Length: 395
Length: 212
Image (tube, rainbow over all chains, first blue to last red; front, side):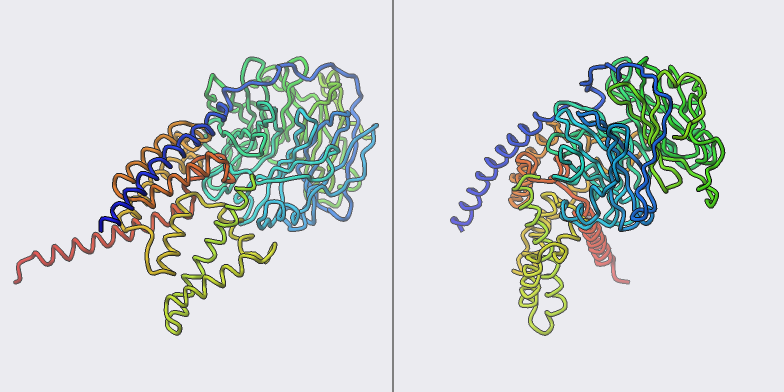
C-alpha cells in the first residue's frame, strides 16, 4: 500500500517536472513564431518598374489531347527572365487524371507543355490518398526556387480540399519535395488557393487562401520556411466572399480584392488593413458574374483588375483600370471580342475565365486565362498601352 | 515534416488501426474464442496490416481522412486499446469526463471562427505562436496532477512536446492537443454520461416516492 502511494507520488513529481519542461519547450517554439499577417510588411514598396511599349500580343498554350480540359493558370518569372506558367488539365475538371501542367516562355516562344506533377505523385509525397487535383498557385522565392501551392481533394468535393506545398527544381519543371499545409482544425478540410502569393518574412510566403466547407470566406496564410502555416488571418466577412487577391497598399499594409459567390449582390469586394485589423469588405463598381478575378498594381500606383464585365456570363474578359478601388473603373483592354473564332462555333457556351495577371521585371503586363476550358491563353501588354480601350489583336 | 513527426504520424495510425481491429476482434470473435483472445487476434491483424507498403497500408487512407491526431487522440486510443486488450482502462471515468469537457471547451473556442462564423474570435489563429495556451495547458496539467489524473497530465505534457519539438504536421498548438475525431468522441462520452446521470436521478426520484 505504502509502496503504491510512494510510486504514485514519484510519478506526480516526475510529471510536474515534465509539465514545466514541456511548457518551456512550447514557449520557446512560440517565441520563434512571427506576428499576424496584417502587422507585417516586408516588401519594399517599389512597384514593378518601368513602362514598356509592347503592342498587345497573344500567345496560346495548348496541351493537346492528353489534357482536353484545362483551367486555372498561374505564372511566375524565374531569375533568368523566363516566364513559367502552370495550370491543371485532364479529361475534365475534378477527374482523377487531372495533373498540373507547365510550360515556359523564353525568347518569345512557349515550350511544349509537360506534366509537372500528377495526382499519384502528390498521394505518395503526402503519404495519403489524393483523389483529385485543382488550382495551382506559383510563387518564386528570393532564392529563385518555384513553390507550387496546389489544391487537392481526398474526400468529397472541392469543399473538402486541402493545400499542398510543392517545391520545384531550379528550372521549375519537376517536384523536389512536398508537404500538406494544415490550415484548419476541422479535419484540415475546405481550404483552397487561387490568388497570387506574396513575400512574407525571410523565407516566408503570404498565401491568400480561402475556405469553403460551409461558408466561403478568405483566409490569409503565412507559410514558413519549413512549409508549415504559421499564422492565418483576414477580414471577417458576411456572405460568400472568397478567392482573395492580395496587393501591397500604397500606404503601409495590404489590400484584398474578393470574388462574391451566388446571389444577386455586387460581385467584387475590396478590403484593406487598418492597423492590425481588416476593414469590412465593401462592394466596388465592377460587374462580374460570380467568376474568378485577378488584380495588379501598376508602376504608377494605379490598379488593374481582370474581370468578366457581364453580370451573367463569362463570354467577355476585360482589364479595368482605376486609381482607387472605389473607382471609377475604366475598361482599358478587352480580350477576344472581335467576333467568335471558327473553333468556338461548336461551343454551347463561350467562356473566358480565371484570369491571372502579373508583371515581369520590364514592367510588361502578362495576362493568362482559360479559353473555353480548352486552352490556356496568354497576352503580353505594355503598361503604357493600358490607358484607352483597345481591342485584342491576334498573333 | 521532421523525421520525428513522420515516425509519430506512422505510430499514431498504427495505434488507430490496432485499436479498431482489437475492438472488432473482441466484439465479433469474442463469443467463440474469448473476448481477450479475439482482441489480441485483432491487434495482431492490425499490426500486420500496418507494415504493408504504399496504398496497401490502411494509414494511407486514415491519414487522408483524419490527418494526424493530437495528444487527446493518442490518450483516447491508448485508453480504448488498454480496455480492449487488457480489460483495464487507462483513464478513470472521472478523468475521461474531465478530458472530454476540456476538449469540448477547446472545440467551442476554435471551431466557430474556423467555419467562418461572423464575429467569432479566432482562438486558433491566436495559438500559432501564442504564449497564453502553453501556459494555460501547463496550469491545466498541474490541476490534473493535483486531482490525481496522471494519464491526463502525461497527455498534456505529450501535447506540449508535440508542438514544442515540431513533432506534429501542424504548427498550431491546438492541433497538437485536440483533433476533430477526439472532439466527436468527447461529445459521445459526455452525452453518455449525461444520459446515465439523468437515468440515475430518475431512478432515485422514483425510489424516494412514497408507495401508494
